[in-house]
Length: 117
Image (cartoon, rainbow, N blue to C red; front, top):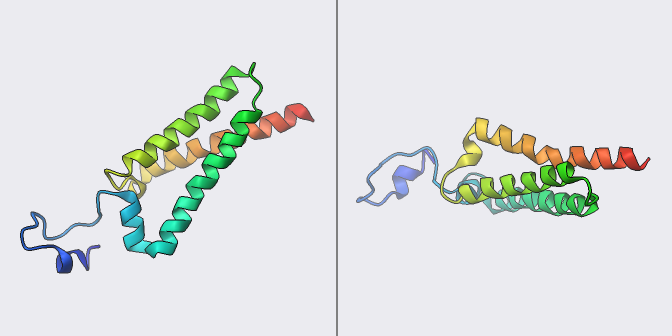
């Protein structure tokens, strides 16, 4: 971005230099190519599929576990939607919190398996 943006920026662009685009999928595609974007999307698709399956396995009476998994799904969805308007994947603090939240459904899954055994 830093090297090529000035080459492609139109003459009327207000900024002649920028370090990132304000759209995470577009930024990933520019930096890593379409294969990188596909893999990035696959990571989140895999998360939603697995977390959704975990949510369906949580017993109705386990309200706290259901809330934890549903909250993680909602938080990651919000992170991805906000990424359409800002390159939040490049913000280390936000990314680390998101990755920690993505781990929560798997903690619940491990606890479900422990209770079943």
